Image (cartoon, rainbow, N blue to C red):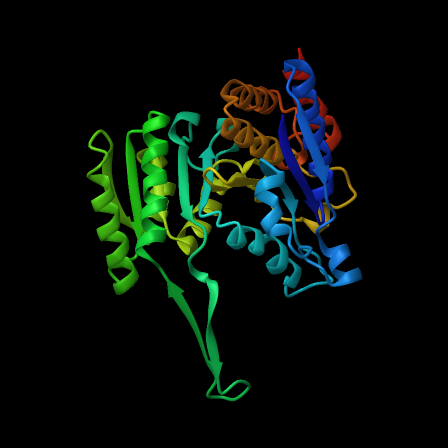
Length: 350
């Protein structure tokens, strides 16, 4: 039995989570798999009501009580500074040391690609983003606040340990999944100290994997190449900041955030899976949110659990739905969230 914690969150999070729960239960019934699903109310409503993000002691309990976390979305106009997001999502990432942020960029249908002559085979890469260091640590200060001489300083921190374990994870993934190349993306020509460390660690680790080709691109060149020649990329490994930016660019060339899943992993401890589309407040309550990013996040979770055939089954069903335009409006279809989700579940069951 796999124990999964469900965190619907805010906005369209509860809507796509409900669809995701239906998918998990349908798979369990059809393939005789046992799930223990537990849902919690960590989100804006509880934050506004009680001022609580994560309950006390929960970080210590999670790895012992659950095998994975499935997350919906966070974001609420009533909390413009996203204080609850930092108290919930970022605290989970940092507190559980989920140092691998893995974001696949895969094109499921040529009609979705905004690039000229885009083809499914040309867009199929995986971005390994370092998830616990860099500028997201919130280190810095403000000097002379509120004056014409105000200075804002943000510190970016990188460690040998943090880089090495992510780079090894990227190479291990390449070996396991038959990927041929790992590309380091940084800005070492301008970011001297962190860039130099990433360079040295990357090429040192690469020597352990002689069967995998390696190369390096500066982040600005990598962004241009993702648009001009996405087929050159296989596995990308990069910093927290650059991975955040490039993965959204990748989502754009693969059809949008409605097809963008992610995994946050601490191997051997726990993993968290989430669509990256955010809370989409303009869609709340309209039954138009795209459930496919949630379904693809579930596919990543199933792959993590070792159910590779079920992961492939979900991807195949989504590909077929896109081909027949059995999708929500963001993917050129006319279906509601509920109908699009039911269509995928029906394809899998039959």
